[in-house]
Figure 1 (cartoon, helix red, strand yellow):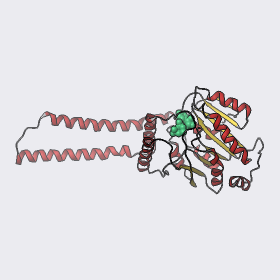
Figure 2 (cartoon, rainbow, N blue to C red):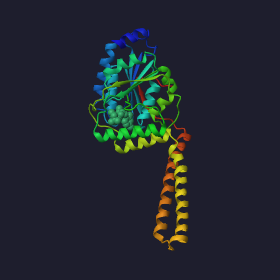
Figure 3 (cartoon, rainbow, N blue to C red):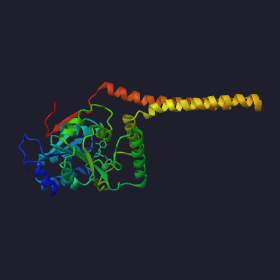
Figure 4 (tube, rainbow, N blue to C red):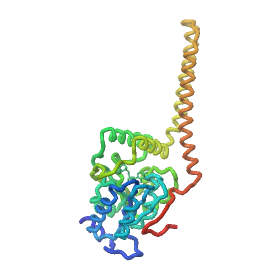
Length: 331
Ligand code: UDP
Ligand code: MG
């Protein structure tokens, strides 16, 4: 109701003409989602049909090889609101979201996952909040669905991310969010290949607020982010937005050198004044191994950043598209 009123105040006609941008674009990345995609489209359509807004649903298939694309194409044949960007192979969720934002033409763009973990019934609430005068409305999950290990890992990730990057990210940040056109345009100016989306959103800044949404278990299908992938994403997010690991080399190097100098002086002192002894090879061996270890660790950290620079300077496109369905190519 509130959202419908917001549509009125925004002066958007219920049925926009073909040339006019839709009132709302809903963007969703899909990757092996054949079990849920039909339910997602039905749920979103039911909510949006009630509002009377002009809308489009832009799905980005991130290289699924199951029936996901076939199901979406069937849905497009029956409903012209649905659009599909089909990637030629898996590029990752961040690239899929970026493609969705590139092809969405609405004056407001709402992003959500299609697994119904975040409720489509909240869409009008997001729109109403955005129209209060914000550029972006993020979601915070009431209670994260998932086991205790999942929640613990999530907490460790967000805490270390906040302290290492100083990004002002709300705890329990969800994946459902809405932007106005201005925010989307600003976001699309970020060309980097290493894309930690949440970090970029905070970097774009502008007037931002958040609303609390309930979080449910996945409607069907399986999570695509196993433990290994989560760790990779977490460390990548940290190195995308923080130079602290690089600077750590200087600090640890200084500390190790100080300890080494102190040990040297202590040994000389003990040998001269307290007890004459012969240092054996085990102690030398331990020192060497520790030194090599610290060296290699920081070489690895520097290597990670060099790898990222390499990826950036190649300047490759973020995604490669196999086909567009019910969509015009963008320049
Ligand atoms: N996803 C994607 N590309 C990938 C992995 C995931 O587009 O390489 C999509 C997936 O289809 C889903 C969303 O990203 O819509 C979030 O994935 P998932 O629900 O598996 O993650 P979780 O909610 O368990 O963190
Ligand atoms: Mg999910």
